[in-house]
Amino acid sequence: MSNALDTRPVTGWTGNSDYFVIREYDEFVPEAVLDVLDGRVAGVMFRGMVPLDVCKNISQRFWDSPDRKTRGVEAPGYYLGAYTWNKPTAQYLDESAEANPILRELLDVPGDPMKVFYDGLNRVLAERGAVVRPSLHEGRESCVALLRSWHGRGQFALEPHDDDSQCSDPQMADYERNEVFGKPVAALNICLENEGGGGRLAFWNVQPDEESKRRLGVQYTGSPYPVETLEGFDAQWVEVGTGDVYVFNGAHVHAVEPNTTEQQTRTTLAAMMAFKDDHNVVTWS
Ligand SMILES: O=C(O)CCC(=O)C(=O)O
Image (cartoon, rainbow, N blue to C red; front, side):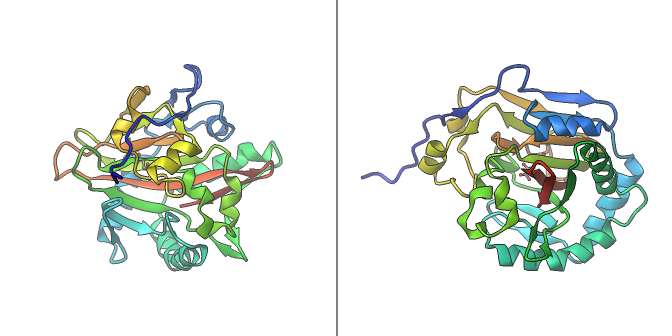
């Protein structure tokens, strides 16, 4: 019997042409984030939302931070914060407890874009009697954000993956975050630096089904999808520039293109969120 990976194209859900767009705005429109959270549109882009001096200040603090860490082969690069991927709940929450004070201090700058984003989102959610807040487990909080810079130098800086499979990971079955599984997972990305060429977001019009995920062994991790398995699906290549803020449905397979040269850096501040029920949008990192 062969152990070779079966790289036939995945099967799954694809959206129609009204849905599968990244809607562009030239300012922050928090109502538009609800369109992603409710699954009416694949993504939204707020061009130039964060002033360049704020981006520069935060990215400099990231590169100067003694707490910045190196991430391994599944997503090579540098990061600050904690990530849920492929971990038990307790480990993630321990790492979050360590990272949160560091992140809060780092982001304590005039014009903190996370605060601007969540204040705006909370304003529109309040009209529905809902709030956005960190996901919890036994009174402990998720990490507020993840700062990172991907440095993979193959076809992708970050391999094709989805963000919803991990919400069904049995290692986190006890964690509030896993209650969102099956709802649109909105991936928030705030671009702090990406000058020069490359660094686009590749975004495929497919949310793979469970059978495909099992076949590829990514049922609980969502990563990686060999690019051959995405053949035949429409893809968007989204230009990402310093100061842009974008939110997309992470259940679609997506990836990050490398920068044109090794000297460039593409740094983003990110978090994920989804409706847990009608009244709570919970976040994690
Ligand atoms: O940096 C981006 O544009 C997307 C990042 C991403 O896909 C992820 O962190 O899962």
